Length: 209
Ligand code: PRP
Ligand code: URA
Image 1 (spheres, rainbow, N blue to C red):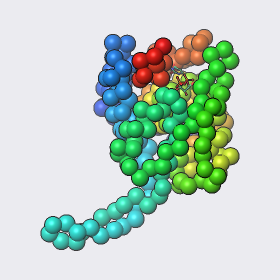
Image 2 (cartoon, rainbow, N blue to C red; image 1 turned 180 degrees about the vertical axis):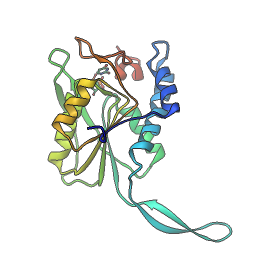
Image 3 (spheres, rainbow, N blue to C red; image 1 turned 90 degrees about the horizontal axis):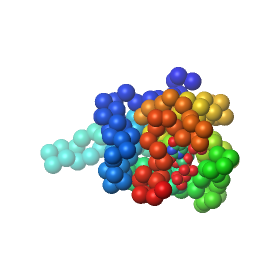
Image 4 (tube, helix red, strand yellow; image 1 turned 60 degrees about the vertical axis):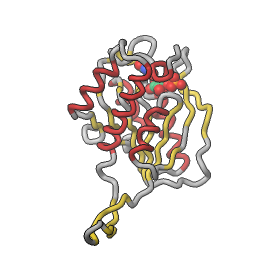
């Protein structure tokens, strides 16, 4: 497990995460922080991307350079993954974006799929599932199930916060999926919220709840 779980130790991630958690952080600032943290975590999660050499012409001379040679796909889980997706499109505009709509039933905490428009054939080499919160792990497991049934081979999960229960459940169900996070918190409370966490990531981004 230890080599599949990547919890960022970067000072900028830790600094921004504390601001994100604060209940005094308003939705506008919260969205900015989700954006910045997502870019930092995406940077770490893509360190193994394949490159192909290419020659570029500078104003002075031809120069050896590189370009990303695999097709990256991002799969934001609605709603809360939307802010993460926008940040990553800014950083790597060639990504393909496939939205998945999942919500947690408040009573059972089980994920319910309500939107899935994946094309018939996989069109991406590396799939990154984006969801700020890995709580029970039910939504992330359902997303990986859907991607694997679709034919995706390399799948990573990129989130901001997790409970240990969610990390363990996702790893147990899908031991081939790398998990990239800013932090693993203490536990889940009786309502399935991550403690200390940051509250409801969707509500805090979109000013609802
Ligand atoms: C939140 C979060 C994850 C899920 C995590 O979504 O964004 O998708 O809960 O919980 P789990 O690990 O226990 O499945 P939510 O259901 O609140 O939907 P929303 O983003 O539309 O608010
Ligand atoms: N979803 C959230 O938005 N927050 C939690 O703590 C758990 C699930």
